[in-house]
Each structure stands twice: as structure tokens, then as C-alpha cells.
Length: 255
Image (cartoon, rainbow, N blue to C red):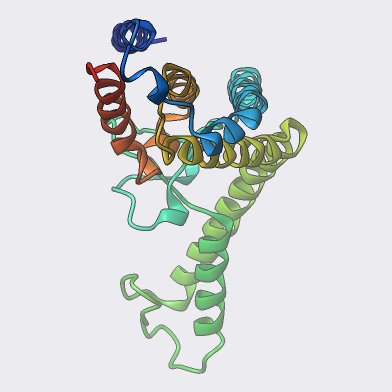
């Protein structure tokens, strides 16, 4: 757990202790008005533990999968590397964990895919079937003018590259299937969403006592273990700490 988070948590627990002490002080005229905890908040805490455990387990399962299978992920063959920046998402090479593979210049590596090669092969083959004067150069797609003989050589080269790309993609597909990473990633995504909903439900309630503050502190602690991407994508989470601090000060303030 990050050091900064520990410091924040320690401060929160100290505040809760102060709130508990303030509420426990003898009261005379106000004794009959001691606060009771929000029943809606108490009702929502029952599922938090199981949801947090599943989120932690799903994270650990995915991390273990990535650690086990990443070393077996095939490297991009030099023949199908593209010596230019990535233009389209479908030509970006990825590592097993989903992050982009980087070239020697530390930029995302572009690769020739079977889909792209099939498109080029089909276009050249179609153009070569058209009737035209012998020896007259012609253009296909974005390529330079070439004669039919030159296009025939290009076509064979593309077919060779297609065979290399197909073998590379098949090796990737085998590892994806055997590792079950898609299912594990889906489990992690679902667990993070369920955790976000559970924490959001708890943080949406108004705590009235130290018990309520502890419940919300536990919810925030559980959310602290969530995937950074999940936390960044949850619009309301940025306000939870502020709302918790406001409630803490309200409960801890002298009556």
C-alpha cells in the first residue's frame, strides 16, 4: 500500500477516534438527543466485505496470469515490423498485458497484420487481372507505378509476409486461449464495477456517528485497492474523500 495512503488512513482513524471521544463525553440537557446511526448506511455495509474480497482476488488472479504468460508472448518478427509511427489502432503491436509494444525509438511499434496484407494482396491481384498494354506501368492503392511483372514480384513478397503474420497471430491466439486472460480480465472488470457501486452506495449516505464513519472509512480503504484505471474512470470517487472529511468534522465538532 502506498505510503501516502497509509498517512491519510492514519489521519482518518485519528479523526474517528476523536469523534468517538467527543460523542462519549457526558451530556446533561442534550443527553436525550444522542445521535443514532443512519439505518440506510448500516444496511449497505453487509455486502462490502464480500465485494472487496472478490475485487482483490480478481486483481490478484489477473496479475498472476500476466506474470505467468508474459514471458511466453511471441515477439514481433522483424519482417512484419513497420518502420513508421502507428497510423491505426489495428496495426499497433501489444504485449500480453495489453500495453503497447515499443520499438527502438520507444514509440508504439506498428506491425503488418494478416487483415491489412489480405487487403493489399486482393487489390494488387484485382488490378493485375485488368487488360492493359504490355509493359505499361500502373498504380495500385498508394504504391508507386509498376509494371505487371514488378507487381507479380510484390505480390509474392506480400504473400510471404502474410504467412509470417499468420504464424505470429496464431501464436498469440493460442496463448490468449490457454491463459484464459480474456475471462480473467472480464472478471476483474466486473469485480471493480461491483466494488465501485458498493462504495458509491455507502458514500452517498450521511453518517451520524463514529460507527458510520468507520463504515465509510472501510469503504474508502477497499476502494484504495481498486485498479487505478477503474478509479480514474469513476466520476464520483474524487468527491468521496471530501465528503468523508466533512462528515468527520461535523460529527467530531462539539454539540
